[in-house]
Length: 183
Ligand SMILES: [Zn+2]
Ligand SMILES: [Zn+2]
Image 1 (cartoon, protein in one colour):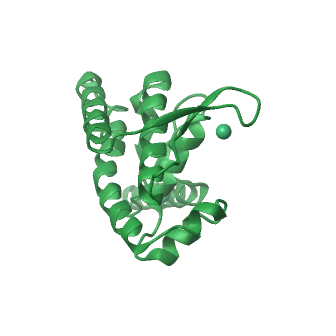
Image 2 (image 1 turned 135 degrees about the vertical axis):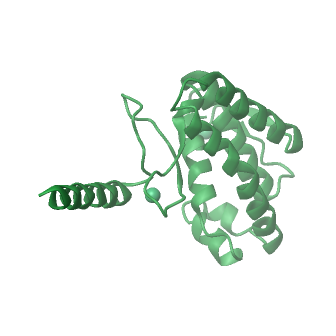
């Protein structure tokens, strides 16, 4: 498994609309075999998982700032461990593309269980290998989308280019206003 890809899929899953099964099918548009099995119950379980997962990304954002990084690392780890306890993950070693790597077992797993398992395995591996501060929530209010920071200098603050330029424009206008006020 490419754990970064699974961690990024976890962020995309959290950001996705999940109102009904059509939304889930749209989210799975590159995995047709899974989309065919999606049900309203999967949607309901995934909405619940979205609520459970958000605090993990919020704790990861807090780990970026201030001196109490240790405490927030603890929060990320604690929440992820708690989620893995509540949603047991069944990994499988696969060699379908030539290299041995981990997947989440698909036998007997519902669509929701599979997506939850992939999210947790991906995020847990990311946090262990690259650190909890790689998880973040977009800083461009009112956006609340989450992201995985894979930038080399680990400085990402926004979910997308769109939010980044929106925040830059807002900061520029604020500076101009401040200049005008003192002129
Ligand atoms: Zn594979
Ligand atoms: Zn955003």
